[in-house]
Length: 203
Image (spheres, helix red, strand yellow):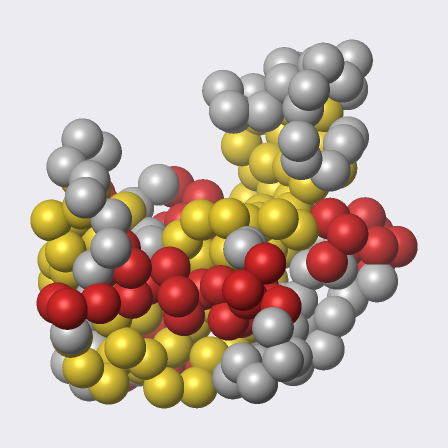
């Protein structure tokens, strides 16, 4: 795995955009970037894992309040520790979050894409994320097993398996763009069967 530079992230073409996402100072725009490289650490504080089983189903976390969602969260200091599986903390964080939120144990990870957020607002006092541009890293991996003893999030029911025909209804629109790209890469026959079109090939 390699990092993109800040300049490359800023210059990357978007395959999908969402305006005025409420969790970022308004006005803003969130762009979906397809890339097999990771967002630079200075712009990225959160990480997510889109995990698939051998049948092409995506395995999500089942949040008590929000329902099915891609497992992920903040990159923690432990994700930077020597001896972790990857030298890139966001990859280690994605593995940890998937285990804590859904009991998912995965094999090798591949960078899938980035949400690039940009706001033209004034920086709020105490705002703790990179500003005015912020990245959220997404990885893709295959589920090796489910181990419910790994669950640490009290607000999660654990894993929920979502078939391809359910994915669009269960995922956010911008997540579904990454999902379709992952399906087209990992399960091309299934992607054709369900009418998924690859958003963009890795550069």
